[in-house]
Length: 413
Image: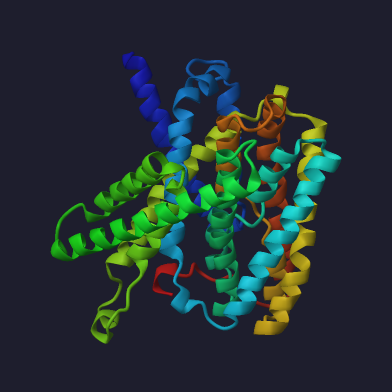
């Protein structure tokens, strides 16, 4: 037992250091950081020494549901903290049109490919279509601030990533909650519980804001706020009824919203900015371990030509689906050619997408015979989409004459 403890600590600490090194690698060479994490998971899954190897994935099985829910909590909470609609900039209506239009076309193409080409069930096709309906917020947040983009272009990319993840979560959670139920009654029940969860999160968020005002100098406020987000998710998911993800998102919006006075603006970053930065580091931890776990699932017995073919075909659909609304946005808010190519190339999928599909697999609503194929195809979709995204971004930079920029501080926008 003692040997296992020190090995676990060694592995856990090493994984976080590898995640940090991977983020530095991205900043220097624009290589997606999760490549290294996935590769590390693959290596650990094939090391023929205990506690590594195939037995490691089996040992993690019992904790996966709680870990998945916790990861979703942090993703949604960070998404709420990131949004600031008063800074949406020019063309808010066009931005919304682009997000909804690109999502609708992507979902339609993904569903058709999944059901008509890959032969998956309609329910599985709907889950895939929703989960991969837009770029991953974690991927977008990892590269967009490092590019020299105008505020309007950066807002389009960031808002699409965050709001797309929220819409994807709503659809997938609806599918999980209402298997085999009559559509009308199931939709009303789902919307009711979602609205109730959002209202509860709003009230709990207001209460927490008032509490923080009474304790402005108290220690450990950030970690207490993260704990409060977990509590709100648990209340929404357990007591109200599978609305925890929306509750965590609404809580993030409530805690992030503020109208700083002139004196506050001059004083620099406030509590909300500090909380965002702290939450980003928490999400980094969850993201690091989750991508390593995903790499553990990439075993030879789960690899198939069909899964690779599906990943390539779906990624092609992601690119095609973005084209019409991307050029609409270009004309409406006057993006440059380079910014248009960057927007078109934002097809990376990541953490939220995988979490939502795994939630659907764990719930049992998908046919059991398709589970292994899905789990085997997930990392391939992430890899192929990342390679495609990197290639399109390189194409966008080529000949643009724009030097790479340092990271943008999203929390001062």
